Amino acid sequence: MSSVDAIEQAIERLTAVERDALESRLLTRRFGLDALNDHERTELLASLDQAERDIDEGRSHTADELRHAVRSWAGE
Image (cartoon, rainbow, N blue to C red; front, side, top):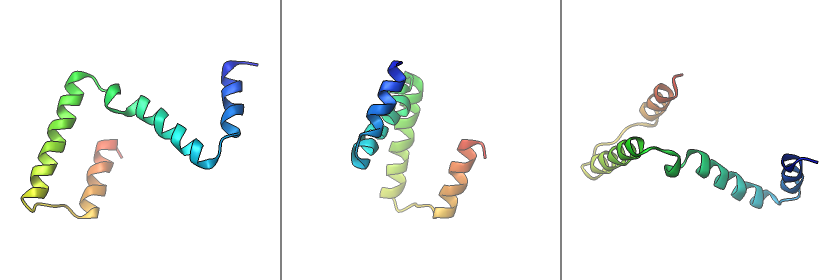
C-alpha cells in the first residue's frame, strides 16, 4: 500500500469536522500567505490596506461588483 493510499484511508475515518479542519490546513499550506513570494505578499497586503482605508472612508462595493471583480481575477 502506498503512503497516499494509507492517507486516503485515514481521511475516510475522520469526522466531518476533522476533514474540514484538514482541508483548511492543506488549502492554507497550498494557497496561504506562505505560498506567496515576497512581491506577491507585498501586493496582497497593500491591497488589503487599501480595502481597509476604503471601508474606513465609507467607500464600499455591491455584491454584484465584487462578484464581477472576482470573476475577472479568476479569468472567467
